[in-house]
Image (cartoon, rainbow, N blue to C red):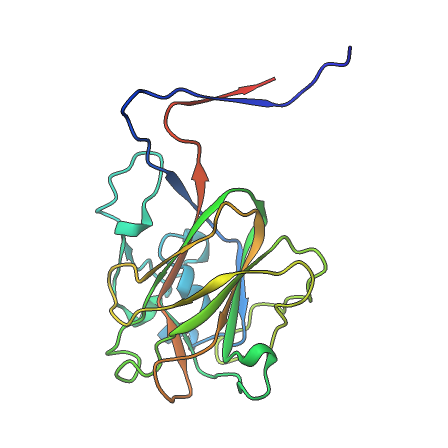
Length: 242
């Protein structure tokens, strides 16, 4: 008889006790998009959208912008209680928009976050709105957007991350195995998390944000911060490797 190898998951439950889903932040290894954002010395670059906790992106003029002090979880993360600083330095502030009349699917901007490898069990994508005061009275705040995920199979080649004040053009989220997660609307109040986008446990290497509109007519757009998490087995789960 051939031996079977696999993973046996045993869940030990206590009667009357509810086990909340636990998450940990997934740290991206790269990001690209249609516009690099503002110049390095003044910050507002595409990488600043991921500076909240991702020290791999930090440089002397790119500083953390997320207050995680309300998160008392041990060994896990709860971005739902994190607050964004409101600083311009911790925002992706694109200096250009795509023309919706000419772009694929009518988008005005896009970004793709690279997790480095396919990650299983993705839980949520948290987004924080940019500051009204720093976006021309809120006109440049991103509003409607679509979310996609991909393992990278057959997709159009992603352009290298644009430098500050540089652009890459449009991108096709209908190529390869890009799959629509859903659509949402980013709020207008900065500080507390604005949107919690459910990823539903999908496996993916890339997460795509397709920006469809901003708050008003303008030539720029802004997203403050993005954090992605994956789910952990619930408390009481024993994983046995056989």
